[in-house]
Length: 592
Image (cartoon, rainbow, N blue to C red; front, side):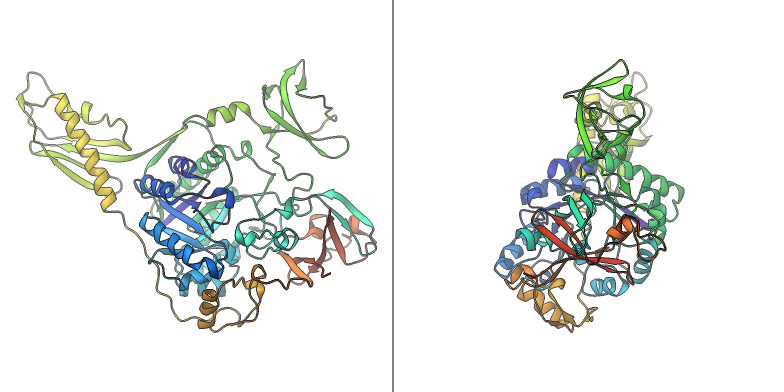
């Protein structure tokens, strides 16, 4: 039976706990450093609190240590990993292969999406060298994902929802070469969310101020069954910078979908954690931040558009009736100049929207709600509880409990017993489990009919019973450990800077697997003045604009354009190179 894991993001401990309450089987969060999101760092103490809470439900906590590590930081990272191991973290998510040569405890390692795993050979290598879970590149289609799942024995993890990087992860250098802020160091300046002009080699402009690299948000909910049947075991929500309302909503939404699938196939699949989440709202991804949705390349290139060309901001949910709007809501629309415009709603009056400032809606335009005040207010309140089902029985010698985690405890019945004057109902007392994570599923009373136990003593027994369940669950929690590294040859012999070798330990690792390191990561060198591919993408601007060279009569708005094409935004200028044989695009910073 295959376990299915819903993996939710967490900016901090409060968001992590809410994710678990709303149905996450695991959460991932950043540590104090090297976590790929500098603004989402957490102390080891806070992470330890999350671990304690998560493990009650057999949910797991993964910590991102998935940036490149410099030589002078190795000791610091080793110390951090030791602390995380002591705190009970289940795994660390890794990009830098130097960690496989560090002096660290045998904590389980997961290969980050920053490792850019796109094919069977890379996935097999990562399994062979000791990774216990592999996060695939987001650009893959179902058939490519299935081929990888079929080739490895470790769980495969894929993203199913959230923001998309336009470049293959780990391969984007635009932020670093233009601003000195490396995405591989957790400092991405989001060059893909800027407006660009598209010009040809003669300087003629074909597109003005459009967000040509800004992708819509990923939403694989309609293809969840395909992903499961392809062999995927872990379903990851992007969003370590998202607020708690977003995480609540999206986690609850995918929990509902995965549970429905498991219910339809109970003999083949199960959850990887325990506990039933009771949610007080109806989850709806359209109500949370989104740039519009795309299934990206899951179905190949069936999607006609993948980018949100008019804005990198949230589009929200479509509004068909303006009377649905309330004071404090935010709306957006495309104005008469063809530009994205947003305004806060004061009220709806006599069939028109009165905003916080004057604005004009073009006739027949689509209105979208980008902020729903009532929805936000609802999600700001407690919206979920998660319970472990427990069976309790009582007899003349003791009280026993067995819960859905398989934890069993028994408490001796060391209480005062009296001859009952009326029939006693111990279930009424023992079923009220109060401020615990437990909820009664079945109860069996094997006391003698004449036995009476005071309610106060039954309450004390109940308290001891739940405390014993907590202690037994903690003591029986099963950790997994790092796999043994085997002999294996890397997928390529000669490593250039795009393989992100940033320290001597990573260099030693690759050499031990048959590689020659020709050049280290660009973050570690000052010789970056020549032409450089700063983004390597499966997304293609030509195709997005309806001008794919492989489709007849599709020159469209680029008719007459002289190649090469360039995109420009302020001082940023990049040449575009289209590799039509591979259906890929390269974004190139030209040398000075």
